[in-house]
Image 1: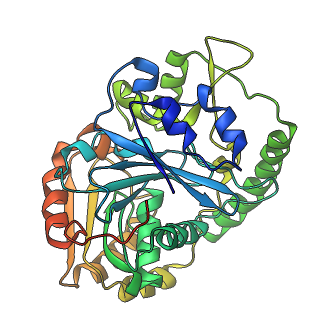
Image 2: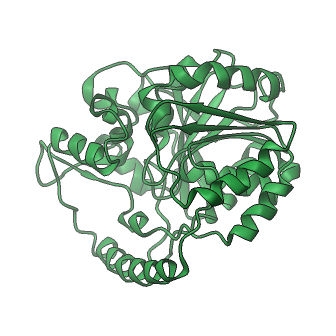
Length: 350
């Protein structure tokens, strides 16, 4: 793995694995942070990193010192590493933070044609990152879908986790069985259509920058303030070859039909019982519970019975960590000071 510092775009993209020529040749039409489009400096200096994986590469943003093991930051569904652009600058400067684009998101490789995206596949993504950097344990900060991934990972691999911070989605959501069956049927049909579109290699519909901002704003149900949508947009778009002043979404369109099902409420309860690590969960008051609240409350009660579980409720939307990062940063800094890997020298090979 090699690192390239943000100010040099050419140097940054030269760090890619030479076998991943599809991404390297596209580099002039890809963007790492909002400033690549607007001319602003990054919210905090970072290094763009690439991690080889069997199907291509994972991309990410490494903030802070590179001689300590970083916190692993994981984003929500159809988001990308830009999700932490506004929170990380408020963390202690000695905190190392690696914000990753999950497969098919941001600048990371898509899964091969014909492969289906499942939420639990991201457990393997965490394990492969740990193997590459030679971490025996991992510290996770996850938002939404990745908050759920952190919950599941901590339950399945309790000996591999230092700590978890979950943002606004506590656990795998429960749906009525009839809804679940119908969702499986329609998602698979739509996934097949998108898989065929990917294989056609045709350029997706393109839009002006302002239209893309509007689409992000509407697509998140106004969860991200419109003036901040640029931080989520940059890594998810590519410049059109057909229309020089337009862009299109470059994230894998198959992600829209992700298989998010993990298991029953009984399984969630057993997972909660198995979690041993220090755990901070942040709930945004103006955000949905994404399921009948009784399921959420049942698991929360189990976690709250543990001495190392902490619960924080704040005013804000589902993306409170972007709109109002100051409301949670002091709590996260305090938690990291007590349980984070800052003082532990990393054995990572950079």
